[in-house]
Picture 1 (cartoon, helix red, strand yellow):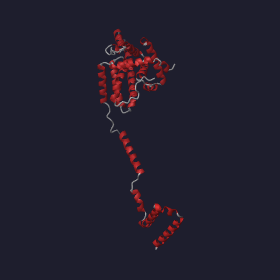
Picture 2: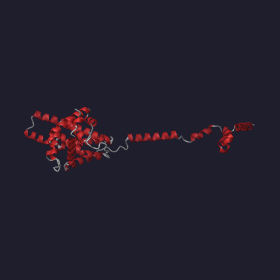
Picture 3: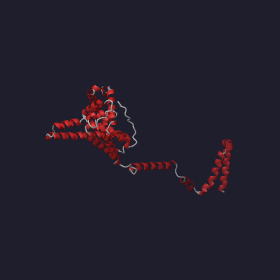
Picture 4: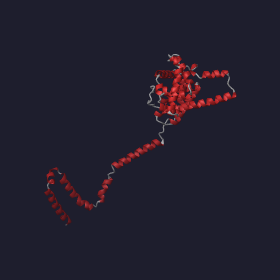
Length: 138
Length: 186
């Protein structure tokens, strides 16, 4: 016989529960006071909130450290980017930078887009760069 | 079967939890021991242990922990009583008067701590007290946890440290006995 089938007399169970609840409500004043007093005494012995507990501070520190590492990983400090040009010699920088800038200006200028797609333009620019290379060498 | 107690009730504090549960815990201990003072002592021990050892646990675990401690305390009380009674019988120390006294003490609500007479069905209440007190301890505990606290079979089994099938058996037997004893009130 399953337990659920035995539990058919729900009415009896409900009646029992209601009576038990009522018996708690009907506890005499002395008992109610005694229970409240026990609770009060018990709570006075409750361990203090563990604000200094290692678990909490340890977890907080771990989260903070993880966040810091994540920030450093995602956006590394700027001086690392700036250190690259210092590695390149100043002479090379002086020669290469204007050429690169000129090329960029040519390629990014909207008015010269048609020129940039013309094959003759590249023949012409090679000649110009070759001439400049000779002049620089001299 | 759920008897409608709010299982997922979130307790804001230990004080809130204890205030909510203390009355029922006291009544359970009183039914089990038949003695008001012993019941209060058991409730005090239970609260103390819960607060000192488990107050840092999540509030959702408090109820199961509380009843687990309470039932252990009640079981300990019965063991002590059993040893005491054996010792008394060995010394042949009890007489007729004392037997009558003990029998009266089995039904605590009959005397000073009777339920309020304004209860509509006070006769049912008295009969219920007698019937519950007369149940074997394990049946009594299972029945009260299931019907009064609305705990399911697995929760009850965890609290009672027994199998789910034992809970079902205890519950079925307890209900059968109560039905027999309370049939006049149905």
